[in-house]
Image (cartoon, rainbow, N blue to C red; front, side):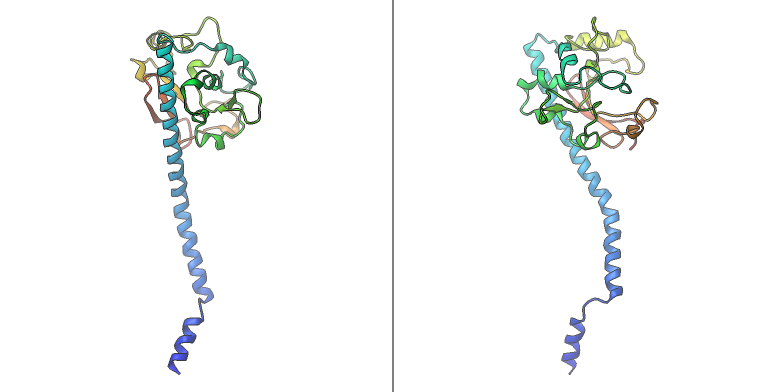
Length: 239
């Protein structure tokens, strides 16, 4: 008889209270762990983005070996790619998109995919200020990185643009320009070349839905002219 009672006790399962307690515990754990998992996932994308930038930096280095230590001058591509130059009226104030570089450096990179920053494709999906395809095909390769030092097709070339310049001339021109917003570099290791897109919350002309938005943790990955890459905080963007 005692054996029957014991078997009955084991078979009765959870009570409603016990089930609710288990569900509550799972919900609490999920609320704690999901943000952690999301941050770990974003950190992995940030690492992959740094890898992309280093490959682009290597491609630039090899390109300059082939072209007498000069950076490309493809202002023609800057104006002829789909949409032309700066097809928006607000911020950014110029056109830092890098579709032209995808075309120029194609012989030096393993895959066009390195021009797509993981994370940016979701956050800035279909934003014309960010994404630049190289042709009108729906599946066209595209870039969603920014290159501020190649952002205008002006003639003559502005001091803060690098079209056709050697790294040494680029540094000297930035020093001569003495723009306090850009900063005055001491050498190539101080000169930002490629960066993740970002939209400062301090600029009134930034679209409201983009204010403070950036790809990685309130900052952005940057490739410098000496080809090193790292993440740097930007207080004008949300963490």
